[in-house]
Image 1 (spheres, rainbow, N blue to C red):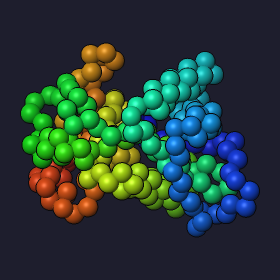
Image 2 (image 1 turned 90 degrees about the vertical axis):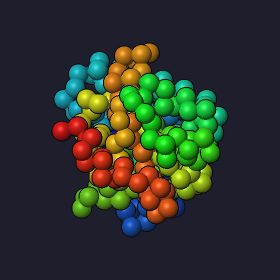
Image 3 (image 1 turned 135 degrees about the vertical axis):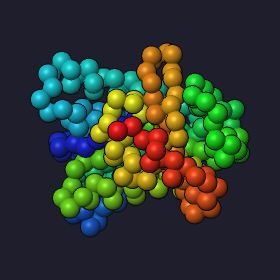
Image 4 (image 1 turned 45 degrees about the vertical axis):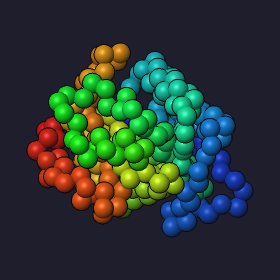
Length: 223
């Protein structure tokens, strides 16, 4: 998961599109269209990392993102929403979580029953990346929230899910500000990385169903 921003402006929208944040447009992108703009998305990702990073590191980071994007595009149910004005302002993408619970494999302790039930019902959608260009007056927050809400509601999901490297404090802080709740840790042997599992309830009924997670998130969140 990435919760970053980008400064370049290589993206070329359709002719006649509005050029101000007030006219921000959200657009669904299918897997073939996503492949077509993968270079722009990779630039958005790479430029969002440390600006002082060595060129070799930036190139490797960009390629790592492309590899992950390619893998996600191949997943059943892959979906992407982009935000644009006269340039690419952000994007979010992911895929449905399988009802067999494989997504939660490696979860430390007992998975909250409410999350388990929502997973079994096919109501959980995994968001693997959120990329947002920085905007004045904290508009990047609004863009991120609109993107994630649009992706989840388009797929009639009642719960968003994501995994974040526990050491990536900027991403964790950004997600928390966008309404995500920390529910525990997941260990993935393949990547040898300890990840934080976060969820995003959609609608009041889901929030109520999750019970005390909203309160517990303040306790579980790494400092």
